[in-house]
Length: 141
Image (cartoon, rainbow, N blue to C red; front, side):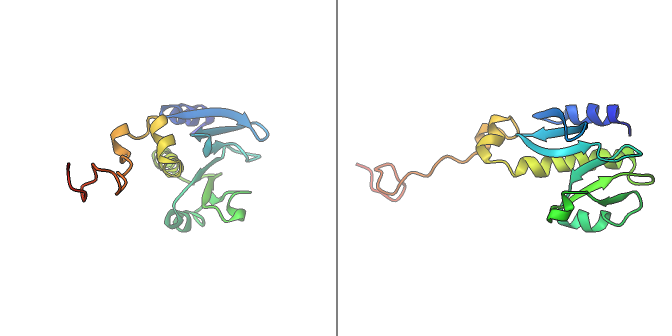
């Protein structure tokens, strides 16, 4: 995957924003939180993404993959695809989509709803306080 394909893929994920920062890295965010970075390697394209703790343990020692510089050293479960063989383009897309999902799920339910990541009906209504005459346990008048 090259950076153009990386950017094109990240564009299709819901509620994403793109910024170039940190020395020219292609940084993708959902709800203002980073979920993918294209860049940060000197010789070849590199792609950095958040993974689950189990995926982190599985990926961190595979050829072409490593714990992400800066992020993993702070205890975060981020992997960097930095060299071949690494991941296939299809697997890289799956991990980028999963990173998006992981980061989006860490946003507040209200923020997820505001971004259109969950339908409004998925947010439970506030419970009716027990002192209300409409509370299920209160007798009707």
